[in-house]
Image (tube, rainbow, N blue to C red; front, side, top):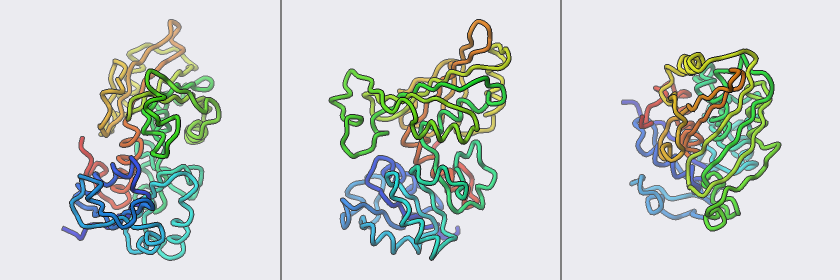
Length: 316
């Protein structure tokens, strides 16, 4: 077998970084080249990640900047606004290195490949700068896309996510005590994912996110106004035909439960409900925000960029 591709992870301390380490450590063709964390620099990776049994230590960002030039690919798992120095260094010194950015920094940059594989496989094999979609944005696009051609007016999406989506920096949105017995709304207009989805679908989407007391998994309830009349069988057939060959999408009649998607790598879409006149459709979509909403999707994009089977290393 060929030598494994070396993958560097910048910002590996967070929830998504941990999931990436587990997936890459078990991948047959990828090896972890380095991991960076300012807070854990110098500490053994194996002391923090049970999925890893090697001898790597975390490095700081300066060391990561130097080490990234020897990598086949770099995954940036950083907060928004911090990716630029790493990208600039590679653009100048190692432009052939594959870069996958999990932040929103390049999702609106036409020079980057927008890596939602179910909608953007064309060009994925030659992409070297790949922007990973947001977790909510993934769920919304997959919920809406099969009906895109028949929409009449903006789509409304009510979202609920576990508090892992708020990251590890302490805030009200990831404080289990404040979230207990609560549903916390935030950014109810103009959310970044609202702009992201509206741009990718070329159709207006209105998004209302909330945080719930559970740790992982999100649910989107999408309200679609239709330009023609549909019945339930026609709607279900439309989704089945759109996603019949998608290994990480499951279409069902009943509404999916967010508790059933935690720790899973796929998306579930169902609960198709039509108004009496057949001109309004409600669809429910669930996914794990840390996996298909981030780490699993990054691995899909890595596999495609290196010409490997898209689901290699992803438990189905």
